[in-house]
Length: 450
Image (tube, rainbow, N blue to C red; front, side, top):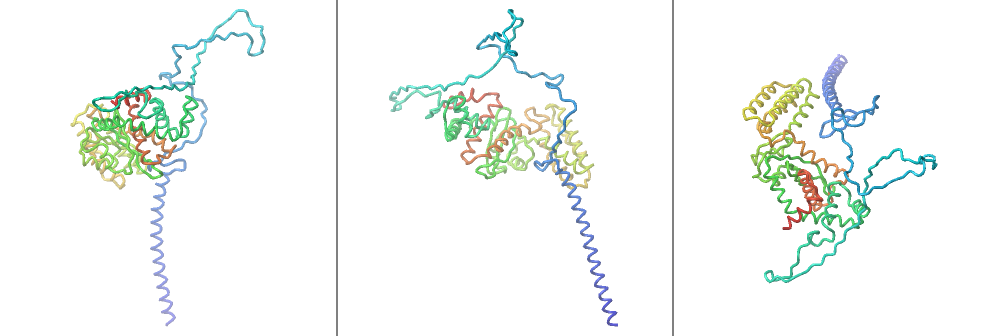
């Protein structure tokens, strides 16, 4: 009887262990199912032939040779681009044929059967122009000191002319050359010998000379009817910081800061700035907008791309959101900045009616809820001709610095970062205004001195 009881207890223990293992097996199967689902989504986001930027995949195309080579030149109906011939010739050379260039023979016809022309453009390696300035000094009874006429071809205390200094700025900031390459280029092309340290000093001196123009630029950015804002990563001595861009139709202002918070645009633009802020819906801009109460415009390119991602990963629900946003965007663009507040109300109401539906996916639901909170920030461009519907301009004006960061790794010091942001603002502002640094730079500096 005792043996029977022991066997019964053992059977009961085994039964409980079996039941426990069965439950654990069920839980493991559920976890495996969840892992498989997450892994499938991960594979969609990270295919083998793709990279990832900002959490979104981009694919690499496999190499493939076309059976029919593409015809060279412009497409049919497009304007052709070609090098125009100069309208003048500084020198005319005549090349007679006295010997056959093929066989070397001299048995050529007595008459010239045909005469052709070739236009060849080349450069002349210039020599530096050295100017010795004799300065008369006279005593001013009013100021009670010796005075002299200002030197207009160089900055105070500089031995190099303004044009050379601006060329150094152009090579370093605009063309992204290194401090090591600039002295070599100047010596080879112009015969000007400077050191790597002089390059740094020139950048600092020119940046300081542009101080009044830079201050004026900040005020013009604040007074503009609309501005694009964006930011990208930057580095100072290996530490991660942020490069901010503020771009209008006539100005471009850059700011390097250790923070990505709303405090940076709040400091740059102030609380009382005018106009509409156009951005990519980053939370820092929303926080600043609550403090300044400035009108906002969300970037529709970002909205459409975000909705496209939902369509890619969340099936019918994501596709519905994507198509609704594309349709609304098309209707908004059709007003061509001539819409009214009533038109904006209809657009938003139509968007809300289409999107207000139950969603199984939490991502889709969250996207719609957050989007419908943006009522006042979606359609400012419909009625305001000064406002663009996307933030592409700011992104384009950051691309130059992104390449510079990849080449040089950022700045080595905070002082270098301040110099860089200032000179970058000057160069890109002149670019926005279709002006050239070497032509307009001296005029700006002379005006600033006055």
